[in-house]
Length: 293
Length: 336
Image (tube, rainbow over all chains, first blue to last red; front, side, top):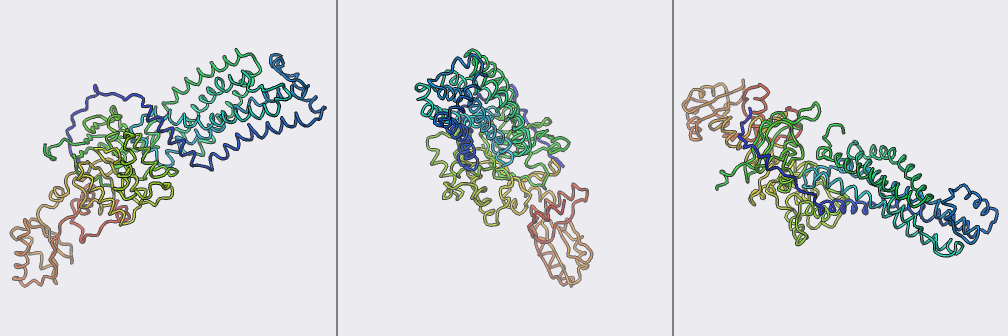
C-alpha cells in the first residue's frame, strides 16, 4: 500500500547556493585545532619530533664543531664543504675553519629539517581529519549541518596545515637562536637566518605543504579507516618529502632566483591541486555511504 | 490558518535511492504534517535513516520528488539545513571536546549570533538536564547524557523541523521515557518532529502521524486512530467462555461486524459501537453460556504495525494480538 502525495514541484529556477562562509570555515578549523590540543597523546610526539630536528641535533652538532677543539675533525668536515656548489661556497662566512664549518652546517645541512617537520606533522593530522569524522560518527552531524563541502574542506586543510607550519616557525625561531648563540662568535656575529632561509620558509615550504595536504585530504575523504588513511598518506608524503627536500636544498644552494622559481612552480601546482581537492569532500562521503569508500 | 490547514513541512514522492546495488529507498512516498510528531516505523534496513538524510539534502536521490519547506533539498539544501535539527542514531558528538564546546561548535556552524550564545547554550542544556555536566569532556558522558546533549544541540539554533533517528537507542527505560517526554514538549513549542524508531512502545502515544516503512517504501501512513479505524472498523471485544464454541452464535447477531475465533480459543468480536457489548453479554447469559472473559480492546500501534506487515507479506489482515505486550527489538527482528 502506498499513499499518493501531491507535491508542488519546487522551483529549480530559484535555486541558489550560499556563498563561502568564512566564519563557518574558521569555526571548523578552530574546533579541529581545539580537539588536537586536547589530544596530548597526539601532539606530544609531534612536538618531540620538532624538538629533535630543530633543537637537539643542531645543538649537539654545532657544539661538537665549535667547542670540541679537535682540529682534524673540523678540517675533515671543512674539506667536505668543497663538494658544495660554487654559489653555496661563496656564501660561506666564518673567521676560522670551525666558524666556516658551523656556518655551512647551520645554513645548508639543516635545510631538510624545515621540510620534514611540517610535512610529517601536517600529514599525520590531515590523514585522519575526514576519515576520522566518519569513524566517530560526527560526519553525520557535519553532513546535516549548513557547512558546505568547500567550507569543510578548507577548514580541515587549514587545521592540518597550522600544526605543522606553526611547529616549523617556532622551531625555526629557536633554531635561529641556537645557531647564532653557538656558532655566531666563530662566524663573526649573528648571521642566521639568511635571505635564502626566509625564502625557503615563507615561499618554498608552504606550497609543498599545501600540495601534500591536498593529496592527503583527498585520501582521507576516500579511504575506509584511519589506519588506511595513515598508510596511504605515508606513501604519498614520502616521495613528496624527498622532492621538496631536494628542491629546498637547491633553493638554499642556488641563487635567489632559483628559490623564487621553485616556489612559484610549487604554488601553481599546489593551488591547482587544492581546487581539485574540494571535490573529494561530499556529504555522502561524510556519511560513509558514497560509492567507492 | 489552523494547524490542520498548514502545508506539509516535508513531502517525498516516489523517491528511489540506491547505494551501489542496494536499494535503500524504493519509491518512498510520505508527507510530514506541520507541528506534529511523525513517526517512521519499520525494521532495520527499512530506509528510515536514508529518508531523514534525503529530507535535509545530505543525500540526493536521483529519482523522485523531494520537497522540504517547499524547497528541493538537492538544489537548495543550503537554505534547508539551517532550518533543521538532527539527532542521529549515534549521537555524533566530539568526545575530546567538552559538552559546552560541542554546543558552541554547533551554534557557530548554524549561525547563532555570538552575543548571548553562552546563555542560549546553558538554556538548551538546562532544558535537557545536562547543564551541570557542560564543562566535562563528552568522552566521559554516559549514553543517556550524550543523547541529552545531542538533543540540546539539535534545538540550539531554534529549527523548525526536528529529525530524530532512534533517539532512545541505548538508553535505559527511565532515560528513554524522559527523552520521549522532551520530544513531546517540543511540538507544544510549534516544532515539527520526525522520529524514526523500530520500538513500537515508544511510538505509541507519541505519534500524531505514523508512516510504516518496509524495504524503502511506505506500507501505510496516517494518524494512528485513523489507521486502526481503517484496519479494525468498529470496537473490538475479546470474549471467552467455559465452552468457547458456544460463543460462535454471536457472529450473526445485530451490531456484530466481524467475528473470529481460533479452534479452542477465545473469540475476537468487532461490534458497531461500545453500547453493543452489554447486549452481547446479556444475550450470551440468557442463552446459558457461562462467560469467563469480556475485554474491550483498543488496537494499538503494535497491532497495527504487525497487521500492516502481515498484509504486505501477503498473509491477509490477521486478528490483533492478544494482550498488549510491548514488542522488544528481538521480537520485531524475529517477525521480519
